[in-house]
Image (cartoon, rainbow, N blue to C red; front, side, top):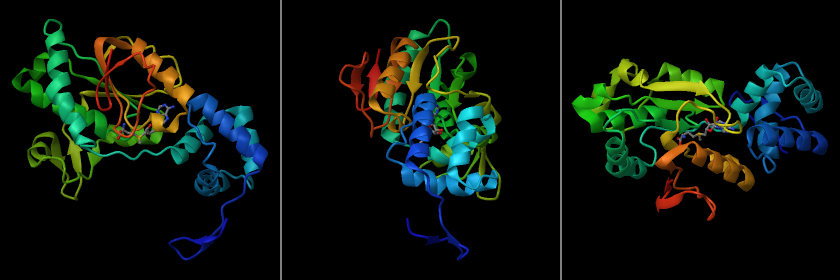
Length: 279
Ligand SMILES: C[S@@+](CC[C@H](N)C(=O)[O-])C[C@H]1O[C@@H](n2cnc3c(N)ncnc32)[C@H](O)[C@@H]1O
């Protein structure tokens, strides 16, 4: 690998990782988190070299040895924060969110007319834009009725760092957020950043959750959003997760993935529209 000058003009050369340590690390991350790093050797050395030096290791071998032996939570968190991509933004795949507004919300609201309680999960919510965005769509649809409904969205991620940002709820907003929503759902911090209003914040319950674990939430879901998450998983991991999602979905409930993903043809869900599936 060639040395690359960093922004300060210094030369930074990533540490090398042996074939054996690479295999051990890939196997650990794959079996514990479902994330497939087998083609990401450069990403691992590039993104982790500085971090492991800062942790006091002089080579990958000692780091991998210690990690696998102790399963040190702090080191695992650091590792995941470096290796997963938390990239997300408001109004991502807006056509899909509009489909949710036009077809899915009316259906689940009709189904829950009596108990007035919706169960929605943003699985792999990253820094929170998706679950807050979902909440805006729900509030807008229900209008003055919203206060009579339980619209709380469960939002989970494996990355503690992403969830900390999500809980803060302060963002630079892209132009795609409608001006009316900027006024209605955010408080302008006068520094180019906007804080979500308390009602929106209270509508999202953030929790750390590893999607490789059994799904044991209190309720089944009317809608599960799992967009741009399974791209990191290999096919068997993805299929097993989709089966667990299916068990955790109410009859007639929905699974939404991203436009760039697909489910295997033998998925237990029925394909309804692009990236949209129904139980
Ligand atoms: C690219 S973001 C997607 C955010 C949002 N859903 C969207 O579409 O914009 C992917 C998220 O998946 C999370 N993730 C990856 N593997 C995970 C796992 N095993 N369990 C839970 N979350 C995971 C990452 O931490 C990251 O925040």
